[in-house]
Length: 200
Image (cartoon, rainbow, N blue to C red; front, side):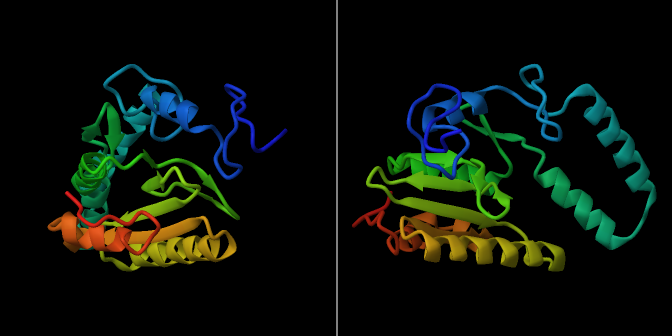
């Protein structure tokens, strides 16, 4: 199978993405279970078996009373997908604000596309600057040991990708950047080929 041809529509695509830009956007419009990926009715986030499993798990965890578990539950609830941008579910309010920032500046981006490297990754945002460059933006919203290990792994993989393929560029944001995206994220984007004199 040719990696540069989209299996859905037959149009050309970049080899590291499963589908072309248009087909990826169409797929994202279909509501799917967050766990197994089965199509589900509009307005739902989980299929029935996983919804039941999640609620039973919550009841069990509520009986355990120590701080680490409480933080993990709060973190999972934070990323339940309560926020939407153009009918696209996003994981957090911070990511929603980044969507608005990119959209207000006329930046063409995809939210959580599948990126096939040595492992499969789903960066928060991939920007195509329409000149052959791809800018990966990863938002890191927590500061805890397990989360920081995953963060370091992702940063390492993305940096390797950028060294191997000069058309890729990687930047990341954290919660402090969200309070002033115009200056903080704008400044980071200006270190990539997507330079602007002024960000909105």
